[in-house]
Image (cartoon, helix red, strand yellow):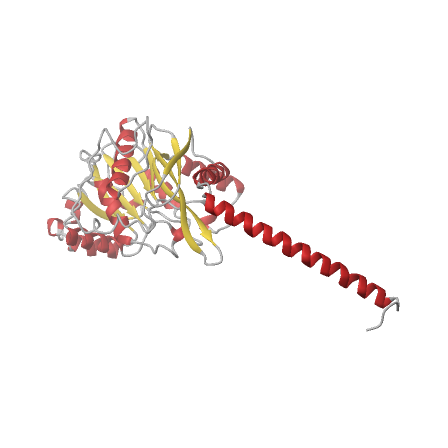
Amino acid sequence: MMANYSFISGVLMSPLRIQRRSAICMSEDRPAAPESLEEVLVGAVSGVTDGIEGGLKRLRVTVLLPGLNDKVENSYPFNEELLFFVTRALATSGAFDTRHLRLLFESTGELLNCEASNPAVNGNLDQSLECLGTFLSHKSGQAASARAYYEKTGNPTGENVSYGSLLPKDVREGGGEGDAYILVSPQNRTGDPVILDVEKILNEAPDAIHILLNPKLEHNQANIAASIIETDRRRALIDSFEEVYHYRPLYVVRRPTLETAQVGLLHYQYGRPWRVFTGAEQDLTFADEFDRLPSRNQISNVVEAGRERNRKPPSEEEVQATKQSEQKFLELLANLSIATILTAVFLFLRTRGAVTP
C-alpha cells in the first residue's frame, strides 16, 4: 500500500461498477491486504452482500482510506470525491437491485437542487420516491456535489436513486423489507447528537435494511451532557449495527517533524477473522488475526512485534563500525574520567588551603 495511496488517483474520474466476486484479494490460506482501490471496494461490496444474505438488517461499513480518515486529515485532507466514489460503488453493486434506494441529505434546498439537475426526475418529486435504496448524509451540499460528480465522471447512480433529507419525514412512506438505507458518514456535532435522528429513521422503517458508512456517532463526538442511562442506550443503538467490512490503515506520528507514517492495517470482511497487517506502502505483511475487533493494546502489540521482526540485521560493515565507535567512546570516557577526578581533587585541596592557584 503506497504511502500516498497513489492507486486512488486516476480511478476517481473513471467509470467503475463493482461487482461481487467469490474470489477476492484475501484468501484463507495466504491472507493478503488489498492492493488497489478496486480490491477495497470489492471487499466492501462482498461484505455487504454476504451480510444481507446472512439475514442482517443493520450493517456497518468502515473504509478509512487516506482522505476519509479525519485522524490523519493534516497529512491527507478530506477527499469528498473519494467518499462519493465509495458510496456509488456500494449503491450500484447489485446488492440493492431489488430494493428501493434513496439518497437522504441534510436540507430540503439541497434535495430540490439535486432533483432539478436530474432530467429523469426533474420537477417530479413523487417519481423520485419510487427509487431503489437510501443514502443518508449529514454534510452540507453533498447532494448537489455528488450528482455533479457522478454526471461528470460517467458514473450515474441510475434511475433507481432519489434524494431526501436526514429526517424521519423523508423515509419512504410504506417502506419495509424492500427498502435499504445507506447512511453516508452520519456525524455527531457539538450540541447536535445526530444519532437521535438515526434512531428516529430506524424506528420509522424498522423492517428495512440500514447501512452505516463511515459513521461518527460515538457519545463523546456529540460533546453534550447526557445521563449514564442515555449514554448506554445510545451505545446499544450503535452496537446493534454489525460490522461487515473494515479497512483502516494504522499510523504513527514521527517527532519532531510530526509526519504521519503508516505502520500497518486493520482489515475485516464479513465471515472472516479480523486481521492485522504490519508494514507500509506495498510491503504489508500479515501479522495476526482475531475472532473479534481487537483492542487498541492488542493492535499496538501486534504492530510493534511486526516492526521488530521486519527490522533487518546489520551488515558486517555496520557491526564493525559500531564496535569502533564504541571503543572510541570508551577511550574518551576513560580520559574524561581521569581528568574529572584530578580536577575534583584539585578543587577539594584548594578549599582546604593545601594548594594555591
